[in-house]
Image (cartoon, rainbow, N blue to C red; front, side, top):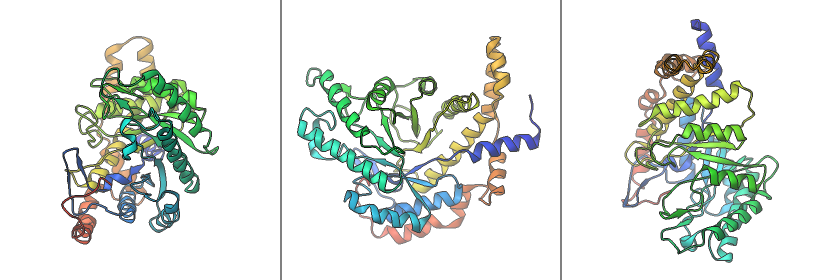
Length: 397
């Protein structure tokens, strides 16, 4: 059924009002590849600068009120840095988002962290996660977002089953220390840096570990962490059905974990994922999904790329909201394949940019956030202020 213009705007406004997305602190810092780092004059080199850049993105888009923090990169002194973070939250009007443990930089983790054959190193890793949980409690952060690089590169060099048991034990211990408001999000990745076996390689392993750890553990889906041509929206549908979907790390990829801006390669995939979430909402399925960006750009401007991704996420979320789900369900029930697909594709091909611009203007935001960023001179200003401090070699964070 066609919507009137006013009804369409009301539907768009309802969809966009319900959508917020978290941005990562590491997305504003100098980064590169495993071969080297690439320096940008405007890159943030302090946690204060990261908060400032995040606040600028939120000022322009109005939908990014939380900043994901990486412990050790952003809180090198752990709990001792919490008061400084709290001050920055107040100064910039931003809240701390997910807390991300670092279980991959210390030399002790060469052969794994929570899955390391050494009981002492496993204990060290668990204690780090417990510190992150405590940081989250003090900053009123709900989610502890856990990614492990653990695995092995050669057959026979590790006991896969032993590592499963160690991981189960570690995650249950971490879960037991969560407050009643916190969640443990367990991410998966099929390969890299481990290339023979990765200890949490897919959504099935993550689902099992979430269930084993306890009722406040959920699966975190990174859209870059899948094999080529994998049906991610089917995974999302299963996780919604089982109540295990905790959140997303959004990026895009051509081959693997390419860290590209959202929708730059396959926007239709994100649309299909969002459709599953909208459908679950319409069916009254209880969920509390965290939408988070996980990107760090070394070629594109960092703030520009972040704004691009946020705006694209809004547009794809809105496109998926415009699917006439009642009519689609009727076509699906009657197996009218062409009509169903054309209705579905029609929503995807709808140009929602005017609707998104009207929504922004109605809420006192710039109609075009990226153009407002370019016209406002913020990037040029910080490039002048920060550029002289950057050397030719920069740390990842």
